[in-house]
Length: 459
Ligand code: BES
Ligand code: MN
Ligand code: MN
Image (cartoon, rainbow, N blue to C red; front, side, top):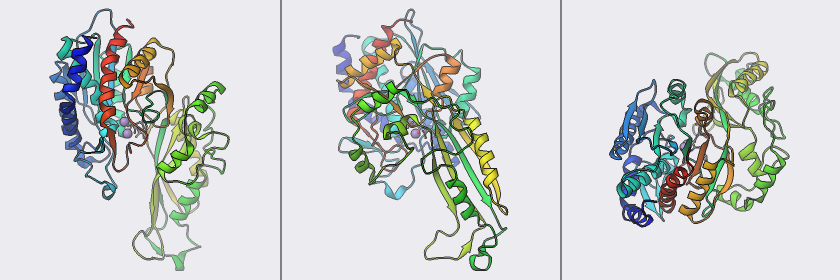
């Protein structure tokens, strides 16, 4: 390290500055799912670009058909690897607003946690790398390896523009390994490296029956009801054993190896505490699998939103003209989102009742990812985390998706290190999203060690 002491001292002395900086970015409501926030999305991109150019990195805002990409790089270092740091400046919508204790875009500290939309996902985690690099540059004068930053604004809506950019710009992004901090630790005080992510296939289904709402007494029973049809069609997607009924769905699934099942089982997962934390009195899922297996390594289907008919106060006897739902499948490695879409269309077309018109919209998809555990870069990352968090990481998989990770492997030919500083009770995507400030600073410290450890691997 550049003299361990000066760097450590720098990190300690700049804690407040790092927090203030993060709050500035968190105040920008860069919601990518909602076009009304397009101006804020751009402001966030500008903010990130400004922050990276302050490091002295050659920085550009790359325009796309969607939201801009922020790219920045430091000079190459002969004999040392090049690292691509990926993250996202976009966030999920903040609703339901009335469930937030403090407003989502007014970052607030309570009990050592910083509350705001994007605090953990991904603004806070992404900035740990920016801050550790600032510390290196200001104490050592330069980084021990080349770092390229690629920060995008469409991760939460499927990374379409970045995917297109990757197709034509693999040269620019050439690197030896990708680093992403956009996942979680296994538990408080137990850091983790994630080596598997699930993929996703996301759909909207719209059903239309009669040309306007009808009296459910006069017409009910003799005219197909889109809400009834929707309930039946959605229910047909998963059977009582938790098996997805889309034709061909399991054909390409990589089964869980016994060794991996044993490793999951060896993790200290407390089912009772898990149930209490999320407020349920029972758990469910595919028959024959444990809870961690179901969430990390088995494919599934969830309805994300559902509508149709009367939702107001009191009762209204109506046969609605339309009904619809948004739903998504989580996929595991080798499952192809396009094949899932084709099978789904076949199934829904077959079971859609007479008198109902169906529109199935394929919104976005991404395959799942698995990263090799025995690369030297993986070992280097484990050492950096042990130094930063004062405890060695465990190796876990994750049920969520980071759509671009598989494209990094395919287009750049490199592995991605998923080094998450969050916690799984951070409420990402939910109300009262938070990030532990202690973990923010531990993440910065681990990141500072990471550059040293990766540089030591050579190319
Ligand atoms: N950071 C998450 C991925 C994640 C989720 C990591 C849970 C660890 C735990 C990422 O921002 C995310 O939310 N991805 C979306 C992708 C989708 C919208 C295409 C997801 O998984 O829903
Ligand atoms: Mn994220
Ligand atoms: Mn997210």
